[in-house]
Amino acid sequence: MTTLPAAALRARIGETAVYTAPEPVGTAASRYFALAIGERNPLYTGVVDGVGPIVAPTLLFETNQYADVATDEFGYAGHSWHLETDGARLVRGGHRYRWHRDVRPGDVVTATWTLADVAERTTRTGAAMLVVTSECRFTDAAGEPICEQTEDLILVALS
Image: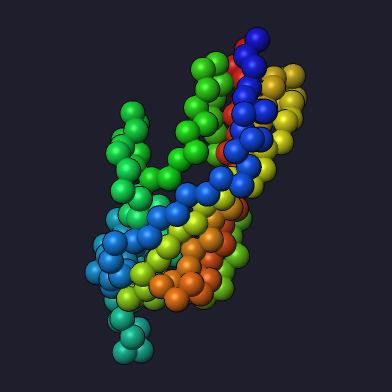
């Protein structure tokens, strides 16, 4: 039976990782990102009422644009708590967002991740499970909040 690292993860509660974008958010980057994900709304891809595109909200959450880290074995280069455990599967349990304002071209964004909670659970089939909750605060160069994100990652024992 796989033992999940609950105590080791609980010891990490409060750990933070901070990533600041190396340059301001640009209108072209927002437009390209929106088009790449299939978003055709002129708010994100063109000019509406004389105003250029606002930043596609999901671009904010791609922490790989801020993090200067090497890619992992799956090619991912964004923030990770490195929760991978032999004998367990890591799945995303969901995200919750609280917006304070739109991301604007010219914003220099900082993403501050905090490991917030670890809860032990059991699946319906009796497998051990850990729910790891992270919180991320996205701010502008003045430290003003843009958005807050709460993310649940779930480790499920395979045996």
